[in-house]
Amino acid sequence: MKFFTRKLMSVVIAASFCFGLASCSKTPAESSAASSTEATTTVAESKASESSASSEESKAAVKTVTEGKLIMATNATFPPYEYHEKDQIIGIDAEIAKAIADKLGLELVIEDVAFDSIIAGVQSGKYDIGCAGMTVTEDRLKSVNFSTSYATGIQSIIVKEGSEIKTVDDLIKGKYKVGVQSGTTGDIYMADTDGGVGEDRVDRYNNGNDAVVALLAGKIDAICIDNEPAKAFVAANKGLKILETPFTEEKYAIAISKDNEELLTAINKALEELTADGTIGKIIEKYIPTK
Ligand code: GLN
Image (cartoon, rainbow, N blue to C red; front, side, top):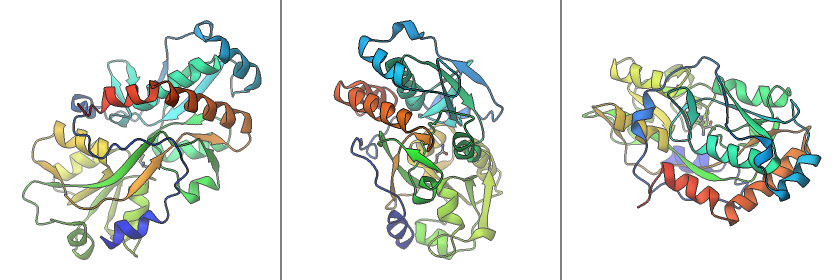
């Protein structure tokens, strides 16, 4: 309990466009098996010519890494936000980024990279945006700008069914090993000795699926990961469950280079319009149905 309430303080509440996702129960679990960490590129089908008249304005104003393209870095092992389906990367982030790209008259290109390389890649001008269920934190704000938030995440703990770990406090006080996805907020919280389990009890994995494999093999005792992928992993793998404990709430937003204020402004405008016309709500409802 202490862990989660204290950590809440370090998460920056940046946004005015937020959607409560915590109560949702269904996720596209079949997709959680995706575990590739190799870089792949998916080019969304839409072309600049499909953009609306209002986009023409933004198009003229926005500079990107490669003219005419919006290069999005993500780690596509994070259902339902981004995951592989056949040769495509789909999910909430992929669709929101596509809707933004359409508005800006840009072609969306998705690069699938290690999560912990996204911020550095955005900062160095390799990618235009990082869109990866990425939590706004004070630390990350030192390196990149964040758009207004478009979704909420919660840190969850996955254990094996029948585990003696019943609460987050059990996990913190015990001698248990916790798996995390490297460089995520779950990693940061858990590695902290003050409120987490401490560095020497954290095992880092490239993606959530690798952590699930380790948990099933008994190499670790629990996983700390965002709630929606947690639900998808539990649904796709027998013998796992999520602890019923209070969770910390985080805001997801799009990371943008500090050198490209115009892109930040254009993306925030697009997000505002896409929120107002119901597009973002529909995308989220598609992947996390509430009905
Ligand atoms: N929300 C977490 C973070 O930003 C995890 C994101 C992810 O693994 N894609 O650190």
